[in-house]
Amino acid sequence: MANAVQSYHHGDLRSALIEAATARLSEHGVDSLSLRKLAEDAGVSRTAPYHHFKDKSALLSAIAAKGFSDWHTAAKRIFDQENKTPQVRFREFVHEYIGYAADNPEMYELMFGRTIWQNQAATSDLKEVAFPCFQFQVTMTRYWQEKGLLPNNQDALRLAQVTWGTLHGIARLLIDGIYADSSHIKEMCDCAADLFMQKQP
Amino acid sequence: MANAVQSYHHGDLRSALIEAATARLSEHGVDSLSLRKLAEDAGVSRTAPYHHFKDKSALLSAIAAKGFSDWHTAAKRIFDQENKTPQVRFREFVHEYIGYAADNPEMYELMFGRTIWQNQAATSDLKEVAFPCFQFQVTMTRYWQEKGLLPNNQDALRLAQVTWGTLHGIARLLIDGIYADSSHIKEMCDCAADLFMQKQP
DNA sequence: AGGCTATGTTGACACTGTCAAGATAAAACG
DNA sequence: CGTTTTATCTTGACAGTGTCAACATAGCCT
View 1 (cartoon, chains in turn purple, cyan, brown, green):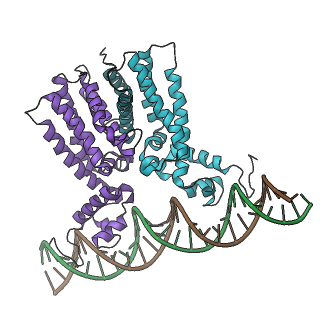
View 2 (cartoon, helix red, strand yellow; view 1 turned 60 degrees about the vertical axis):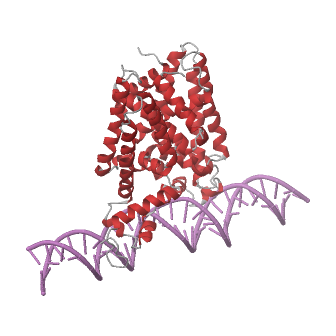
């Protein structure tokens, strides 16, 4: 029953809420996301969402989970291009990562912001999607180490945390508009890639 | 009149608010900071703070400004130690930066979080303190380039954004508890420092 | 048919930031 | 000194928010 319009039971409120929230998120930001408004958008009463999500944080986690899943597949797509050299793919990955963050600032903020992670507030649901995503970063790092792009004498996990940290940090500086503006994204990405690959062209 | 206790006029409400807010910040986090509670703590009515701060964001900016000022002097202190080699100082700086963030997570979150920066919400007051702080990062980067620690063929600003981005990113991953926990801080710092200095010991 | 469960509703509560209007003290000025 | 201006603080009010409790409805299972 996907199209019930005016019945007592909505039919698929959970999906409707996530969809409305995702739309509102990218337009007005995570701070303007209120359960009550979302409920109104979906045409239900204020407390209806509580039958589908434990609380607001759980709704946000569900949205973020979708984001992680999407990003994970995007990352894999870049990483698996076998017709390109590891160097090229590495550089592409850097650009794509920052690009994703710059193009979806509110989603990125939600996914990697404290809102859903602090105080062990993360749903187990969320963790199940996010952790493989994090883990993939380590897998890629190990590969880049094997290919000689990154120093081989460092622990892969540690190195992954640092390289990812770099991308994460640049992304956040850009998103929050702190001493970095979006007109220099490409230069920053190349600078970071060069720095890591220890190859100054 | 610094010690008026029960008079109609508080005497130095502005300072009292900042002090109370700073204390509450490090204990309960920025999210639990409410103007009303702060006012109550200071023994004044709910709307009294509005005669000293345009709005909540202005109060937060004032606190952050203090944080930037403190950090700036700390950074200068490390950078100016002439009895140590640039290498040692660079490594120390990395450790100090992450250490500061790890020791004052809520303050760091406030200073470098979107709360006070988004939507051009930053007070000019705040900018005046924060920008020299950012600028100092560039100055240091240029110095490290001259000393051969960092690649000399990169634009100093760009390189500063990347190196600072790295520290910022690691700090945030740690603070938000995303795939990095505080028991490996030192290893992560050394890994980052090694990566930058292109010196694998 | 009857009951269980999922889902939706209204009412209520305790919060929040912020504005408007009035009260009071201190400072400035004649 | 008195008066007026200004800075500060107060109460009242409003529109929001997340969330709980109690109740209503509809669909599904036996």
